Amino acid sequence: KANISYAFFKVEEFEDYLDMLKVCTDIIERKDLYEENGLKVEKEIEDILSKVDSEIEEKPTVLFVRAFSSGAKAKKDDNMTCTMLDNLATINIAAKHESLLEDLSIEEIIEEDPDFIFVTTMGDEQKAIDGLKNGIETNPAWSNLSAVKNNRYILLPKQLFHYKPNNRWGESYGYLAEIIYPEIFE
Image: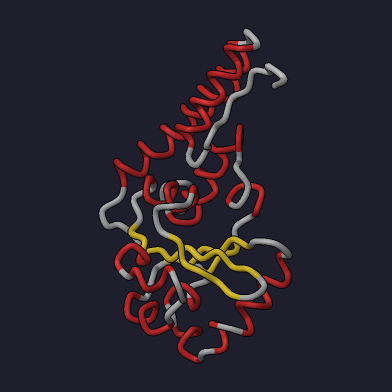
């Protein structure tokens, strides 16, 4: 045994990050860093969410896809981006269709016709994009989806939506909010 103190953190959403940051900044006695990288970011997120809560009338539907070179899977509430989308008052169609979590079913996607389709890639980004192009996008019905026709089929930046955004959580929320609610965040 090395008798070295350690801590283990599971950071899946902003509140987890804030808790972890508090512990770490308490250890190093740097409350200023907690305020700058935690509380300031929390305020950014709260401002975004309060605008959404006060302005929206109808919740838009979304599909969140994690793509990789050999395929793609829809995600629901077990993913940080899905948590952000939920906080932004969207309805994730994968939560209604559990089968989408295993295999992307074009039939169920067509049936729900989501307002937005968000994609993040794992591994080599180009190979993941090619996997989508050679897979689900080959179905002729794909191009008739509202999200695709209205340029709301969006590849999200890895730095904000695949990797933990850390002190950029506010930026992640803002990025999504501007896409989903352009009339609010002009």
